[in-house]
Image 1 (cartoon, rainbow, N blue to C red):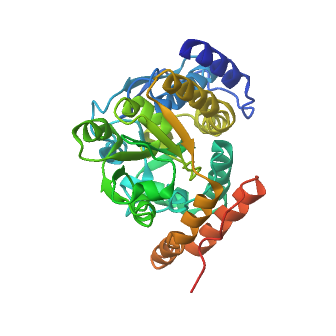
Image 2 (tube, rainbow, N blue to C red):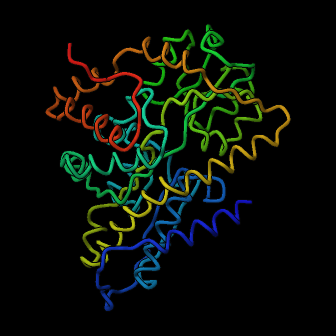
Length: 358
């Protein structure tokens, strides 16, 4: 099934229109070293995004730019990837801004919004718009000796539990594995006990009873086979985040001819669009189909009444974030406002307004 899906996706990707640039025909071939903590593309969505971007670049440079990938955290764990690309140990790396909030406080700031957009295209388009409107995104990366190639959206977050969960009251007293600074805050207000844990450790934690459930995007839960230990799924329609960033070492980027630099950046814009409109939907459909083959798998969707009640219980974390980064000189309040405005214009309906000054 995966083979059929990805043949179609690659065909779509190569039909995208790049900005018209003249390729530097005299450029010497270059092979760029790429670090990824994820498994190869067959089983990881982030790796698939990266692979498709690489294929676009190689195609448009007529083979002059190729890539050597180091999958599965073979060069270091995910939180170490910014340092890898910053130092020049690799030319390119995939990572999240939330692992380095003091260095890149804006990079994945959309994850502070509970009940945010669940359409990956809206997330990708909104974050691209804000990256273009606010120069602080680019400046922060330049301080880290990096250039952003792309930032692709993830998949919807769900709960996977060892026991049936269909409503908010089912979480009272249960231990739930989460990642990120704020997810635990949201889980706590519904009575669950948050346990910080990276996605790669969830399977064992569920298996050994360290946690009762896990809150993760479905692509990561699929990659790490969490449903084998926790077959009860509750879909809260809570959010899709901007997720994975692809950063390139500044010196490695500047060594390339200007027209080749444009090819890399334009391919980044295109993969964000392809991911949001096509790739992520097909990948999600594949995951749901695979999970439904498991006779123990049970799916439930959180009711609108429970979603509204949960939203009202949540603290205004976006306001806290805005105040915190504003104290550091960033336009925090304006970013929170614009994220809601742009995503709303693209079709997301917010259950409440976030980032209200007191």
